[in-house]
Image 1 (cartoon, rainbow, N blue to C red):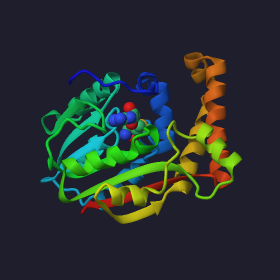
Image 2 (cartoon, rainbow, N blue to C red; image 1 turned 30 degrees about the horizontal axis):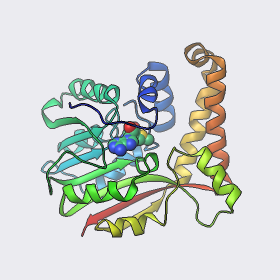
Image 3 (spheres, rainbow, N blue to C red; image 1 turned 60 degrees about the vertical axis):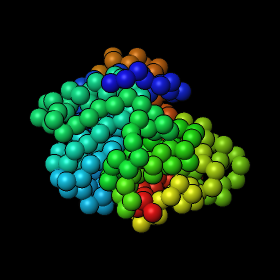
Length: 268
Ligand SMILES: C[S@@+](CC[C@H](N)C(=O)[O-])C[C@H]1O[C@@H](n2cnc3c(N)ncnc32)[C@H](O)[C@@H]1O
């Protein structure tokens, strides 16, 4: 692992929590997995990613913004492919190292600290790429997609999910979503346009907002159910703030202001 570049958000803090058993229990309830993940990709959706990437043992997968290894490690486990996991926070990548070893996959897993906007790889290195809810966590969306295209071979397949504001919202609702959603949920133009500009051709785009809302609701229900142990862990005020933040996100989804989409693109 090399030295990490600067990150503007406290993802390291999120990964300090996501490795704890009490938080993994919530992850299991909300998403059906226990990798210490911080995206909204469920176990079931990870199996869908495997299919839409047409992932097999001969592929070389890059999971960008892979955090503690979700979903890249599961994709590599199910397909027997080689995987490179890239993210910024070292504590997340350390969790991925441990999980890869626990799953007996160390030989097929490379773990790299770096930025998706300046990937430390040669041109045309990978034939499969994935990223889960990463583009809504950074401002340089076009640069990120251009970098993913640079390291992809022609006809490579890429799957990603992203959380975004609904189109055509009145200004106050748009501003509310910017406050409530992930740190860089706002996007200039559409993801289809950005993909095209970066040299990717859209193969599929699914609206996965309902599943996102259901996962959030299971998380909130899990917080209520395990209130005592979570308050002991986080403190009462912090727990209430976290729960209310998730309830605000559910409200934004329910009123149609916030969406989650899953794209499949092919390197043109
Ligand atoms: C919502 S989390 C998803 C993490 C992981 N894929 C998962 O599903 O648990 C978004 C991730 O994007 C990473 N990230 C943010 N900016 C990045 C950048 N410029 N380059 C690479 N990763 C970045 C964060 O560190 C964080 O781990």
